[in-house]
Image (cartoon, rainbow, N blue to C red; front, side):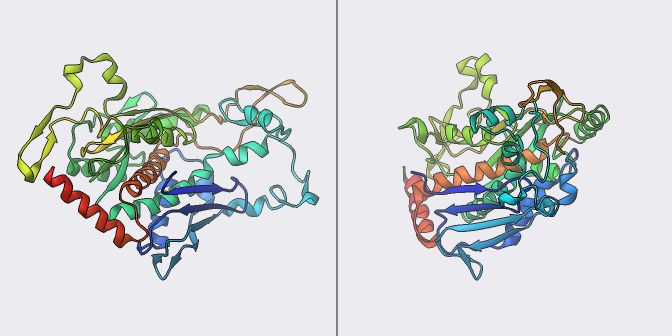
Length: 394
């Protein structure tokens, strides 16, 4: 059973997004401003669509926090959808408003539209696309901000940056970096309109997005998420669903439009010799202990953190909603049509990297509480310190 669990609810044009998190210990300092800072990062990035001009996301803490500290009870958050004022009847729960807007009957290739309509027996695709929309990820980022706030108490930090948009890949390499270098890259990426630390690549990525806008197309890309300060021992090898790499991969692929995940060298390892990619182990007395000079494994061996920085890479497909629509078939008339267009991004890779941080933080926080769990921050901290002393003596 998960030690930290969460649920989200809400539709893209519904009244609000709602999130509930259970398992966060009592006495963690938490404010709405901690969450809003992450929400703002999600909304930024060159290539975002018109929705970002409408929304200015703010998380309201509904429960679980009193006078700036968590109480140990479930934390409930809400984010208002500013655009809902234009959809009051169209997204109304009241039966008398049925038919106030036309049904969407033309599923878009690449979306959940057709499969979802068949699965849930819906003849208005809006009943699928409203929930499958990436608007839902705003709440994931909000909940991830709470997890980040928790991890920061133990000097664990999570960040990300974009390394590829379309055909242009960044020249900045991050595979063998130490913690300080990760944050130098992260800082440079935060100043980039596409969250890329390579200035030359940034310019070309922006140009590629501008070209895609002109022709009514979209672009995908690749981002990296890292976590520093992780202790040895999060996750486990003893069952498939306890392996931390499996949990992380699943969390990242659950983000809309993510089609592939690799950890450390990932697929590059498949074409390498074993002697060339294994991270050899060294020892330098009790002060330093065991260490590695390389991090090809990306900080996880056998489903367990090994004390090196965690490095995950995720590939995002191009946004399937295109201004120049693709061919589809009307689910009612069965006649061919051009797929319906819903307001969308041209490139959302910079935003996806922030969402990737949130999902990574949520998984790590869960694994951390699994190992060092307690009902209060004081208890968790005491358990963690005792474990670190144990590691030093090993």
